[in-house]
Amino acid sequence: MDFFSALTNGSSRGVLHAWSGDAFDHTPWRDVVRDAHGMAARLRALGVRPGTRVACILTNTPDTVRGLLATWLAGGVVASLPLPTRGQSQEAYGDQLVALTARLDPVLLLADDWIAATLPAELTASLPVAGWTALRAAGASASFTPSPPAGTTWPSSSTPRAAPAPPRAAPSPPAP
Image (cartoon, rainbow, N blue to C red; front, side):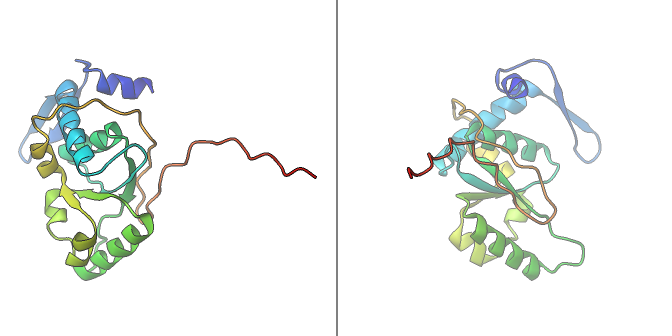
């Protein structure tokens, strides 16, 4: 939780370094967090609440970093979906995502804008889809109060995983 607090309390320490094609961009972490707060406000408007599943196709872009933090700030539970594999057709990849999201029942699918634009109509008709950069632009002026993190998941190359549910008290055994 110390890491989460450091991320969300506007710390002036730390810089996000990201390759922009011909050089590294250097963004202070407090600016990344400010952007993530705006994105989190937009995620709330899109139905993300504490504990809801958000399907994400995670890449290594700066807006993905912001969006992942925004999802946690909004209380969402990240379910990582795979990237297309080498040699996989766009149709096969779309079918894979349709099957996985049907099992997950997420409230939203987030991905890089270029991926979001290529998703099959069958998927986008049944599930709201947003690109990280578009989400960032839409939440640019929004204010937001974060929720405690509901859980995290770790990326998988093929299987989405939801965060474990918090432990609950075991029910009392039935009386004899």
